[in-house]
Length: 357
Image 1 (cartoon, one colour):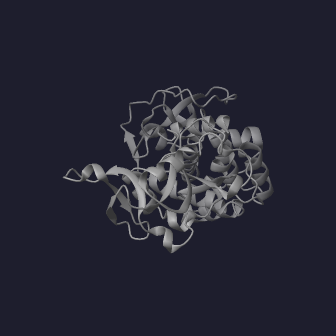
Image 2: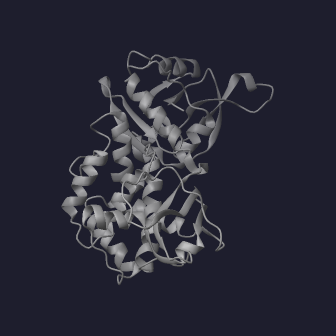
Image 3: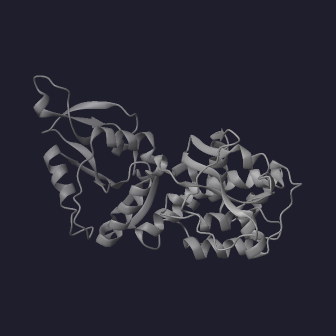
């Protein structure tokens, strides 16, 4: 369990990549003697043709290409939705640099082949989700422009998703892009590729098998969007269930039915470590901000056990300064999102949390 939690800590740290530099789309550019562009193709499609025998159709419309992606990812509808949503977001984030300027090559492509007489040039550089620098010089001279422009947005969307799970280079993103845009790719080929690269199996329920890291990754691509913020990652002895909150990197237990004072609730959480969960991190009561984020992300739908557990959940946050502030803590009603001032000697339900940041 300790090793698994360390993996998850590493995973969560990677979720903060939005401000990083050096991720982008590389193109294969062939130039005339006067330095004008003879041909330009995104690296994904070049490798798809040369290395994997893929065939592409310039004539397809944008809508038709989206439908083709959906059909190839029929067994992974959530992955399809995540890609398309990312494409819609990133398509509005292009910032074109003036012609006569060029982007410096990033170091995350690691290509192994290039057309003789041509060279790699940076077509796009991902700065963050709201700012992708694009070379006007190359973009305006792409061969098969409709196909290559669509491929660029697809590449950026897929690579964005894969970096959340530790991708340090764009090789897998390029191959998946080359596959889902090709006329001669089959669903069987896609299924085998996803299972090989990510351990995804469309026949398995996510969050139930594999390491903690595997479960979180699989559910990110497969689980119901309605409960996307909480993933069941462990079921321990005695029926204790552990859920991972994607947006905060917190682990949450079940809602406990015990009706206890504040001190007892805190002690019951701390007793979960390390015997019951096999790791050295300490379980604790949540702060008011943490439990409110869980309320906003509908934690009751995911791990709730009945309406009676929605009233007065202990938090570690003291009531605002006042005469009795030392004796009162905030308690939250998970059904309504309303806070109550609760004397620490009174009783309430509780839930335990563990930060793995």
